[in-house]
Image (tube, rainbow, N blue to C red; front, side):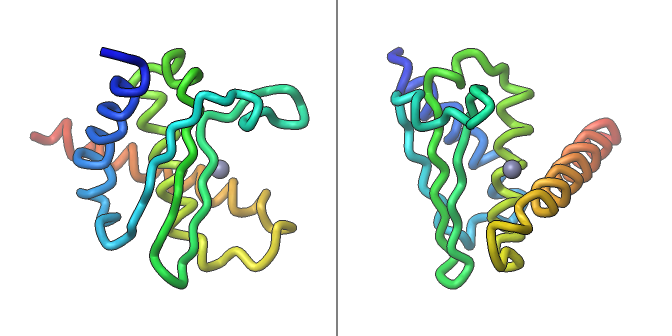
Length: 126
Ligand SMILES: [Zn+2]
């Protein structure tokens, strides 16, 4: 299986097992796989795995995925990053300008942890 197909399958699984049960199906979320790692470079020379853009007015979002970096990311971490991006989509309506991005990151990180802890708690109860 080629890298792109393998990554596509990982994201299809995340959609079915994580995003859909979370209630994200009323959003149209498009995954864009990109092999251009330069696009994902941050000013501090680290790379991000995904870049999310959402438009709450229309319920649409795109997640650009750094395909090369996904191969270095295990399923557990990929799921956490994916949930993080889903939370960005859910709180997108609150973003008024780029100045509040640090607060949004903090909120989204907390929501991601809450989601994963609750999901794990429910799994343990089965
Ligand atoms: Zn973020």
